Every structure is written in structure tokens, then in C-alpha cells.
Image (cartoon, rainbow over all chains, first blue to last red; front, side, top):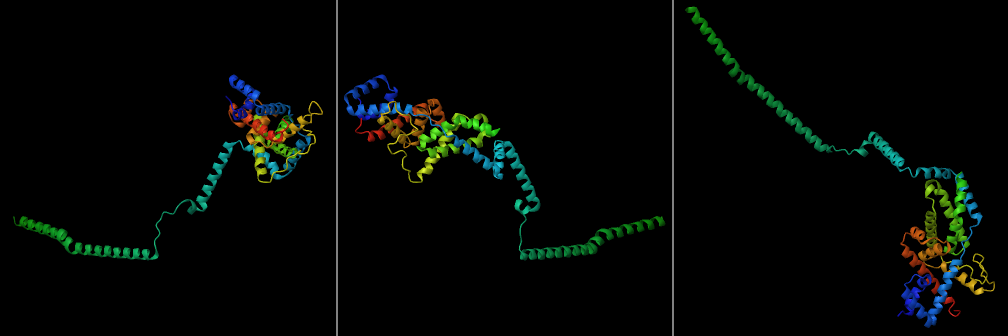
Length: 187
Length: 172
């Protein structure tokens, strides 16, 4: 059993013959007894029939002429001349990418030469004047210690090491040579 | 060279574009503006499209222009519907019997009602019923299954009927 509400949503499909046979028969039966739905069906049929009669409209030739005039005006300007050239280039993505890459490379090299600080980060530590003065003082002090130690080492070598390790053994050797010589002369 | 090619393409599609825009907007002025806009797009894209300049592309872009027009129009108050008077609409066919004023009035009201339908139903009805595109072609252009196309046609015609039944309440 189909209701008026259900029929209302199916009338256009019914007119086009898109419904199943049993459902179509139900609608036919309902419409035969229901004057409201019969009116709706008639209107649905009229609309479908009239829509088919609607003609395709003819565009006035002046529209094409206006477009051509606009195109000619645009072509006379500089931008208008550039536009077709740009539209030709647009599909060449490979060319675009290559050009872009070269431009970026040139910009990078130029910056690294003329403004290296913009490209390369200065990694050297930064000291204050006081820190530098203190470091100088420390270095002078260290050099003083080294100097003192060197002098002291020289004194020790001259006074202790050289006499003990070099002069005394030499003296002993000389004494021994002299004694051996004297013994030889007596014998 | 390009101008000659453009003239050939324009000749091929101008009536299709104008007709779609005319039934979509309901006015000749807007239809002419939209047709000009669309033909300019064809001119601009002729070099890059070459083989891609198909009816499907033309329909898609025309529809997008019409949707943009709808958005722009939504921002300003609605213009009074055209042809409200009882005069004959020269864009609609004359009825078989000259005295059949009712048929003529029905056609005029249907035309006005089409321009008030929701966008998808409007486009589908224009493309199918007036421009005579196949379901497959509409399905491709609107990027929807064929069943959805049919359903939008039925929905659109139902809305037309509901709109007209208010006018012809006593006549039927």
C-alpha cells in the first residue's frame, strides 16, 4: 500500500519508467482513486514533456566579437604580450625548476662571498675585555714561572750535575791515567 | 592563426555555453557576460589545452563560472525575476495552438523556476533536458555516479512541480 507522501517522492521516476513493475502498478492503482495525486502526476508529466521542448539558445555573434576586441586590446599592452609567452612556458616545469635552482645557487654563492656572516654562523667564542686582560696576566705569570724554572734548572746543572756527573768522573779518569803512567815509568 | 582557430572553437561551443548560462541565470545579460568570460578562458587556454579542449572541459569550466556568478549574486539583493508580465517569451517555442496561452505560461514559469533550483539539480536538468547530454557525460562533468545524476534530475523536477503546483493550485 503506497501513501500519497510516498507517491509524491516517486512521481518523476514513475514518469520516466524507472520504477519496478509492481511499484508502478501500485502507483497507477493509487492515482486512479486519489484526485490529488492524479493532479500531481499530470503536472509531473507536463513538466517532463515541456522540458524536452525547451530549445538550445543561440548566442548572439556580438559576444564573440566583443571577446575578440577585448583580446586585441589586451595584446596591445606589455602585459598582454607577455601573457601568451608565459602561458607557453607554464607547462615546462622542468625548465622552471632548473631556472629556480640556478638562481638559488647564484644567490647562495654571492651571499657567501659578500656577506658570509649571513650564511655561515660565527662559531668563535666571544670574550669580554676583562677576561682577555685576565688571560694575558695568567699567561705572563706562567711565562715568569717557566723562566724562573729554566734559570733554576741551569743553576742546578752548572753547580751540581755537571761537577758531579762530568767533572769528577773526568778528574778520576785523569788521576787514574797519571797513576798508571807513573807506575809504568818506575817499572 | 590563433584567431582563426579561436573563431572555429567559439562557433562550435558558443551556443552551448550561452544556453547553459541563460537557463542557469535566467537573464540574457548575465548569460552574455558569462559566455564572454568563458570564451576568454578558452582563448587563454587554447595553446596549453590543444587536444584537451573538449566539451567536457568546456562544460566543467562553464559550470564553475556559473557557480561563481551564483556566489557573487548571493552577496547582493536578488534582482526581480525576468518576464513577470504576461508577454510572450521570445526565447521559448510558441505552442502548437496559438491560443494555448496556458502552455506558454507554463513554459515561462518552468523557465523561471529552473533558475531558482539548487545548483546541482539546476545544472543536471539544463545539461540533460536542454543541452541533451547523455547521463555518462553529465556523470563525468559533475564527477558523480550515473544514479546520482538521475536522482538529481528527479529531485529537480520534483522541486519544479512543487514550485509550480503552488501557482497552478486551482487550474489542475
